[in-house]
Image (cartoon, rainbow, N blue to C red; front, side):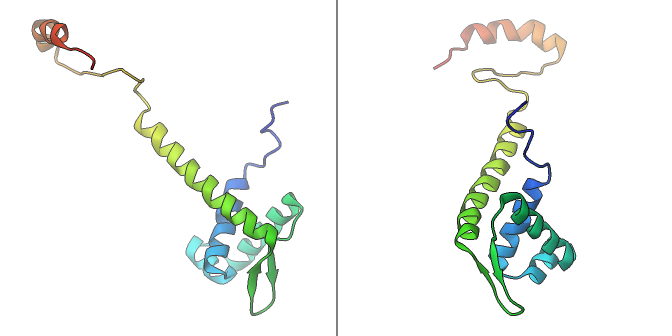
Length: 125
């Protein structure tokens, strides 16, 4: 069994919701920002807490405050989500390239007449 098979598919969405609630310190504002209802945001946080087995927020009707576990998860989640976004951007930008490879697209007549001489003069520095 692969080590990642136990990670729920919804984890990244739940972490994104958690980060939004934490940055705004408001379930209501996070719901507005993410275009969801407040009960949906609350349900995601409860699911995340259940999955991790910890309480992430101290909640009252007036105050939302991170627990120590929530604070730890917030720092790790921001880093993980940022690195994931960077990984996706990197993969998309280099999708068709390999290190030390140059892709050239030319019309057949130009390629047949010019490319041989040009490549002969090309050096990798």
